[in-house]
Length: 197
Image (cartoon, rainbow, N blue to C red; front, side):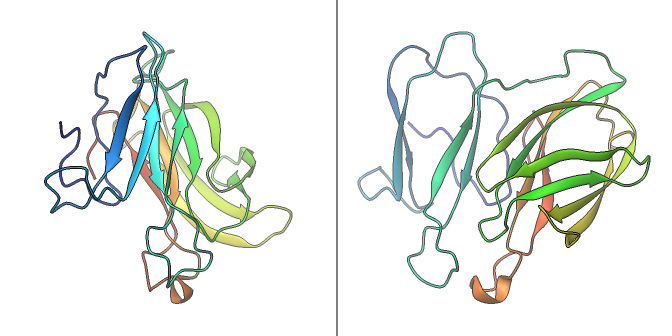
């Protein structure tokens, strides 16, 4: 049965309930498909009862046109939250590195300044939840071990009304689109528990 239909790049689903304790297969198929016969990829999971997971699709499907040609995969975070466990004045932030051509990075907060909030996260890795006061932040993504910035991004948690929320911030896109089929440029993207783009 379709779990997500016509699911697009840089889109999040809401949390969905699935059966726990038994193996099940997730198939990724082209949007024009009518079954899983020619699925692009298939993954088998057995999930624990009363647990919450975040799954992130990443990597490259095409065998050419990308450097590096990192294979398509789904990464799983097994201690996910649907809301902040503390108060409406805080936002819990899970960080994920999903930029295939970006090296390991640090994230520096510049507005308070709070200094390093994420230290040396590499492609396909999650950094556990940060519990932040719900306010505006400025985030500078720095190539680990250097002073080179991959980009500076605003994170206006308060004006976005994210108090009491648990969100996922993902590094997405390419540092160098010119060797990656002119794909989407590197950016920080936010997935909310309710899903959406």
